View 1 (cartoon, one colour):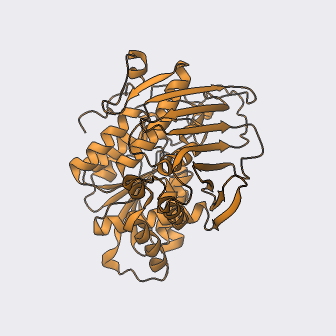
View 2 (cartoon, helix red, strand yellow; view 1 turned 90 degrees about the vertical axis):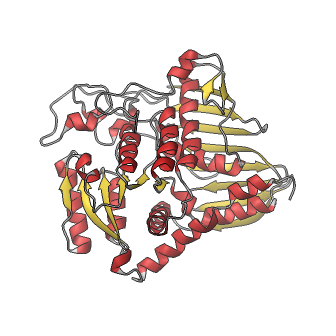
View 3 (cartoon, one colour; view 1 turned 120 degrees about the vertical axis):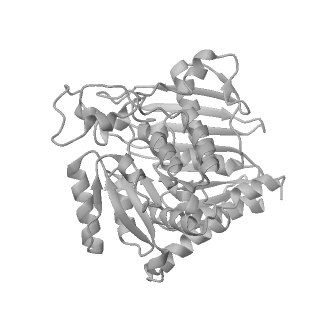
Length: 436
């Protein structure tokens, strides 16, 4: 198998849970699920992917949306109408997620808030006995990822990360090709996030929109005056609430790059460069970034980000290349992979299937199946932590402009107190994550 190790074979295999996710989605669309198989679910965070998950769950017979929760009554009402139109029933509406966690009838929660709320809510949900589906990135800072792993084990909960490709049949077939050794040994993988983003003009602070519980929206983040650039959707531009583009679209592709590299630990050396060369306006993140991660196995993972070009790489704005000793594979979560072999890059096997929406539905199907039968999903907390760590370590290397040495076992930097301090953050009370 061209030096493909047993550990790599196991890492490439998505296992039975992936099949359950795909088969489950097909079976449920045919209406085979009985009422007693339904999972009582609450969705927290109604914009963007939150509303997508509401639509997905409302059209499944194995899920019952009990409660919707958001700090903005306008988006909450819109999501409620989506559920009513699909099911004929009106869910309970809440503005405080703690009321959701206190409801004993709710078995699982879907968290689709801004990043800074993901771990504080997920930790409290698992402590309250709920299974959790958490949108990417699961952690806002590195330390939160380890806490999620510990809570998943401590409370015996199902945890599914919103890296949807993990439940995709396309990725399952790509994993079979890697495990067969067709490409030889995978020595380097590259993830990219290349797209044209819009500029946000700098805006003055202003009044909080009517009905919005802004203090609860801020939650563990520092208290600041309301600014529309820091609210719905635009929050991705600021470190108080997000992980930037490397933790947004980049989160998916870093996860795939680590999976294909066959590593189940953290990198030991990280270098990064980024800058602002095109996008002006309100943003705290660079508009271009390059990160290199070196692993103890001698393997290298690369990340490239360009947010000012209208074209992608290999025809895709979001994708990966897996480089082996015999050939390479181009894979995009847009539903595509293609193998190229040898010096002349002859085309090998390829596949086109699904869409981002379909993989999202497959990932949710798998989560619900795992809630019912307590099987392990393909994106549990440990996988989420290892992949999200790349976001945080790359961002730290960029901000410090240093070559960083990292100890995977102790999860700390080597002789670098300043970098270690950036593995966590200060939480505004009462939203600390310690002791959960």
